Image (tube, rainbow, N blue to C red; front, top):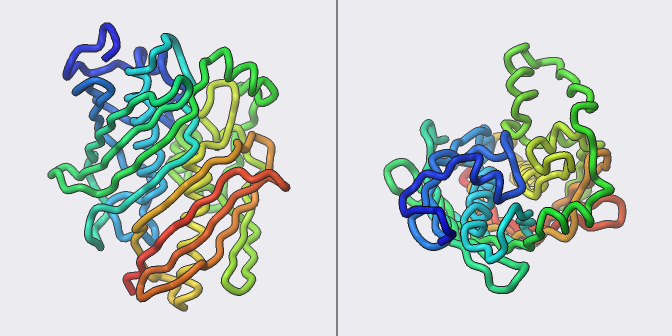
Length: 310
């Protein structure tokens, strides 16, 4: 446990933001408390609709919140002082609840335990439960850890003056209240994919050009598309393909397992191609291979198992 962090102490955002690389609205956790050496608990919101997932929270949002919580836990045992960037490079998600369950209407509970295995890599074991303690998901995350100075050297080409970014265009169905909320927190919605193309058991779509607004809170002055947003696009695309394959546009499903690897980052101004294809099917379980790329550069891949409930 780092000097100054007391057991069961609630950590302030000021202290956390001095250690980690993300800010609100991407950071949405509350009541973070130290419960051991490199161990934290937190209250976790449900900001997005679950759409086709018959779960209290969609899997991509689980990845977002728990990966951030894991980075907070890792920051407490980082042998180096000061702010660091925790770049998720691999993650393994597993559903722990039997479905289906309704969307949560109250804050969930997250736990994380982290350790440094090498000087510049950390691993976090995290879990999400509901308000009554029922396990929902587990997530294991591996991070590459960069000091703020190292990050600025490596990613200086991504620097943007955010205040010069124009406001996002309002969609035709958005009310003034909806638009104000989205302007404040774009992470309440899945990424706006477009240009869908179906080819047999493969489905592709495009995101972008990515706006700096969509990267809000990740990272300050260096708008980079969060890995969780990439995975949200991929899991949503796989869900769309599943519904098309079973011939039921309203079919519900559960995300049972997910294996994620982040190969590179997508920057504001770039267009990202998303793709998914059916790898295998056994009973109600459908396994998809998903990928995201910018041109020839691979951004990330995901193997995803969806359990169809219809």
